[in-house]
Every structure is written in C-alpha cells, then in structure tokens.
Amino acid sequence: MSWVEFIAAGLGVLAVWLTVRQNVLCWPVGLVMVLLYAWLFYDWRLYSNLILQLLFALLQLYGWWQWTRGGEHHDGRQVSLLGWQGMFGGLLAGTLGAVFLGYLMQAHTDASAPWLDAALTAFSLVAQLWMAQKRLQCWTLWIVVDLCYVAFFLHSALYLTAALYAVFTLLAISGWLSWRRQQQLRGGL
Image 1 (cartoon, rainbow, N blue to C red):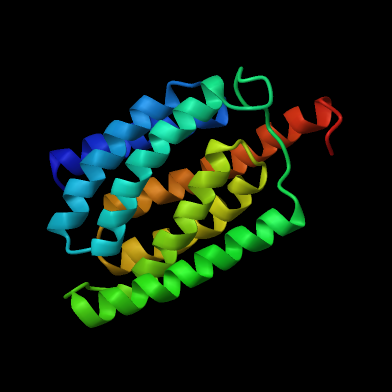
Image 2 (cartoon, rainbow, N blue to C red):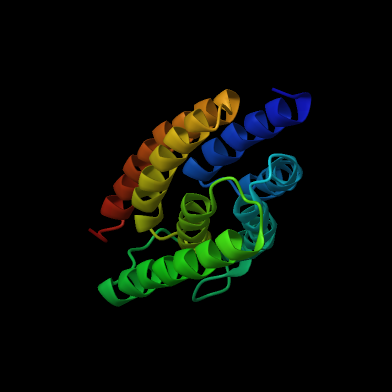
C-alpha cells in the first residue's frame, strides 16, 4: 500500500458519499481520485483500468456539467429512470466494449488480467454515464461491478483497493435506496 493509493481510496469514498447525497462536489473530488488511480493502475499494469480512469476523468467533467446545467431547463438533472431501450443499449455497449477491449489487451499488451479488467472497465463506463445522467439504474450496475472488483482486487493482492470497492458497494446500495426514495417522493416510481 502506498500513500497515493491511500489518498485515492479516501477521495473515492468521499466522492461516492457525496454522489449518494447528490452533492455536486462529488465531481471535482472524483476527478482528483481518478487521476491518482490512473497513475496507480499504470504502475500495476492494469491498462484497461488505466484507460477507464482517463475516461472517468472526462466523465467527471461531463457529470459536473450535467448536474449543474443539464436537463430540460438547463438547471441540472433530477433522478430519473432509464427506459428499457436505454438499459439494453447501455448493456449492449458494455458487452461490445468488453469484447473489443479484452481482445486488444490480450493481443497487444502484457496486461495481468485482460478480459476481466476489460469487462469491468466497459461496464464501469456505462454505470458512470448513467450516474452522470442521474439514472437510478446506475446504482444497480455499480453494485454488480463493485462486487466483481472486490473479488478481482483481492485476487490481485490489492487489499486496500479491494476494501475501497467493498465500501463502494455499500455506498452504491445506499445510493440506490436514497435516489429511489427521492424518485418515489416525486411520483416517478
């Protein structure tokens, strides 16, 4: 465990906690976290996750904009449900992204876990995009992805990061409950 991993993990918990509470500060805190993790994943030779963190940096900026200026009236997004077509499209994009990235990592790098790393990367991007749009289903996908990450990082002996993803799983459950309650109060479920 390095001090960079420790700081990144702490910022990660803070960013997700702020997200659960729909506090816009989740985005700049998350931006710093993903840049630190990009550095770490490069050192650990988890190249799909490195790419993920760089894409997350862009999605942090997109989410920040969506939460402050997105939506119908450009005054920020509200929690909403993604339709079946949107869910299917997102999951299909995740699957295709996993296959494409997995092949690239297997064929062209010395990645330590090319296929699993690629799958988790692709579906994390889908979940993050849904989160930026304040789609309730983002939390369900995050729960599944985070549980897989816990097992992956335990297997990779990255124990602090595995613990972080266990906390992320708990926060994702809390996020789903909180956002669902808000959606119900607005009459959306």
